[in-house]
Amino acid sequence: MPANPRPELSHPGIDDLSLVGVLHALADPTRLTIVGTLTREADGRACGTFPVNVAPSTLSHHFKVLREAGVIRQEERGNRRWTWLRTAELETRFPGLLQAVTDEGQCM
Amino acid sequence: MPANPRPELSHPGIDDLSLVGVLHALADPTRLTIVGTLTREADGRACGTFPVNVAPSTLSHHFKVLREAGVIRQEERGNRRWTWLRTAELETRFPGLLQAVTDEGQCM
Image 1: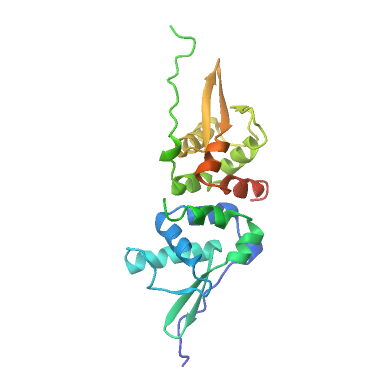
Image 2 (image 1 turned 120 degrees about the vertical axis):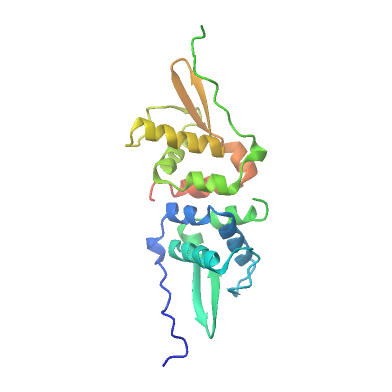
């Protein structure tokens, strides 16, 4: 039996990202806070350590929206799920977008 | 009786714009096409001349969403309604955002 029974998370390829999908994923205060927090965490961040005040199931939904839109990458490490921004890929696909939304991330 | 009986349109002040509201307004293919079209029209554009294929009532809804989020300004001129991007104000409030979304506006 594997140490981690959870199925591997899937992530869209960079060419499958859509601007509408990314904008939709970003158009939420909690998700903007997650993204703003991750811009200061080049090594990623463990779930459960984000400065948001929502129920775990709600937070899980927000991560799913961001992951499926291609904004974040997540990986299981032991018993924790880690999250990163797909900064370089987003910059390649939508130059300037992440910077534009995270400059404002602290004063929505 | 006034020549134009329609009530004047209201527009939010620059300080009332929210990043979430602007992102939500932009997160739609038709609205991104409207915005992308307007970036090439410094003098604005008359309604009914946008390269979108939606019913007039749907288009009217899209303009309302963009106007209420502060992305566009609209004004009645005779029997036509004209639309502009609030380019300078958006750039002041959310630097780089409009550029980031309209660079990509043609390939969503």
